[in-house]
Image 1 (cartoon, one colour):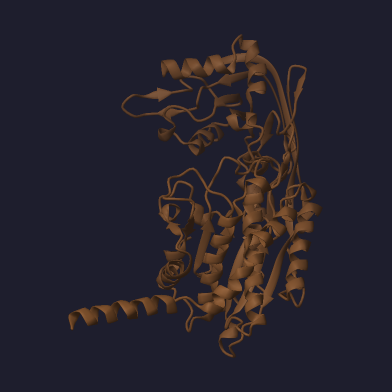
Image 2 (cartoon, helix red, strand yellow; image 1 turned 90 degrees about the vertical axis):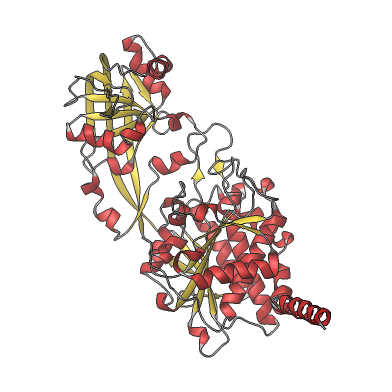
Length: 522
């Protein structure tokens, strides 16, 4: 009898497991395949689009491709019937120069200013002496250390090296705050990133900043200016300056590291720097497609899927390939979202459309500070109160170098931050359908990369909308021109996109929306 009961239990368990899979969802997901993925990404990551930078004609071409595809497959425009939601932003433009003696240096190539550190009135600095102050550290601990020693900094141009010993005791903010408080004329910060010409972070740190029209950041921009320019310089500028002191950057850095002792000194030079700032209005767009729900009651609720479609554009300081094609970041996520839209339209053709409505947002300006999603939550086309969740997709076409059992993994971030219900659906769906490794190492509160706050989902989480961020991980081509089409694993991209589709299917057809049972984490 017990043997028969055991067999019956196993039979029921197997039935229940198979019933968890929805045959209509599986049939619809067949369009999420490598042929279709390659078709989208071959255009989005092509040289023709020149890196799809937000606020440029190249970014607009990518947006038009997405809108045209929505229309082709029958996804409706969500902006009063149109697809484009215009975002109004200000691009910060800098005019900057640095000279040592009679030698002029190139902005971004040899030095750069943080846009927010240049006031509208700009600056014009001249100096015949500079104070070299090592790493700019003051540590009053058990072994006192002071890179300034008895040197006065008021009215001086101060030259500092980037991160070094004891920085944990005296942060970058404290260094700059100390020099600003003591009224230094300017800071020349030797930053290795200036010399890593292929590093896309330069695009962020130099004069490519955008701020939303009407944003608090734009309104308070000049209030944030400390009145003391901070100019980031590379080795070329540093050595030109130090030549007058009969030394160079490598020698000084080695001496500081070997001795672990400060040795500030003044040296004579002929230095000048100027910078001015202007604001240019730009109008990138979010591309919004809409599928109406089929249930008379639930159709008023909406599930939001998002992926940012634009990227960094052209690296104007590189030699050779200068186009940031962004095949993985985020051509892969954008292609995945289009494939998911395809799958839902296949379901509609079969008479199995989603009960809730679905909004597909190809977001602009994620690389510029989550601009498109920030604009959307302040200008929503559908009620945020009726938005049940956001599934955000970024970089799903590659693997990283961190340890995994195999390549069949994806990072999930934020699923449990606001809603235990959403977390359960995300994990149960994967268990029922795709069985990928759901890696949550970036979801911990002390994640050093703080990825929960760094993509478009976060703007929805701040509104109390449950979110899940799907991410494939960092790799050596991140934010570099080498992030190319031919490095994408299309089978893996499709597996991940299918997981997100199945999760969207479950959420769109569930009898109840995910309950928000945790506090908003801002």
